[in-house]
Length: 173
Image (cartoon, rainbow, N blue to C red):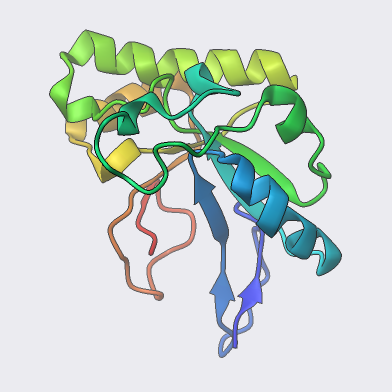
């Protein structure tokens, strides 16, 4: 059994309790249709990492790859804004969901920085969290996140449940 907490929860933590943070990458409409009503009903906080350049569109990064989500649609800004703000936190997932390690350093940093700028403009709130598409990162990309002003960044690599909650680079399952 675990207690769900928001991504920005700062304690207190009970010593023997288990906590979880629910995150969704890619901001697919199916999350809004299927998960959000249940999470809202149960008052469970969650975070959605959004590819800012694909709102309302098909995921271009999956085109012609035979992926089951190729024809899923990314939610529009209006659909995302319809989620109750007291249970959702929005995070960035770049502009175009590129594998950042395959881009030159300058283009990768633009993807990281500009996604924050676009989302902050759309939602009129600070975007503090970032998740690397495909979990692809290196130390230069982490530096870009720091320079862009993110408070914490997330990987797709698992991490010990005993790892500090507020470390800058955080794993997840």
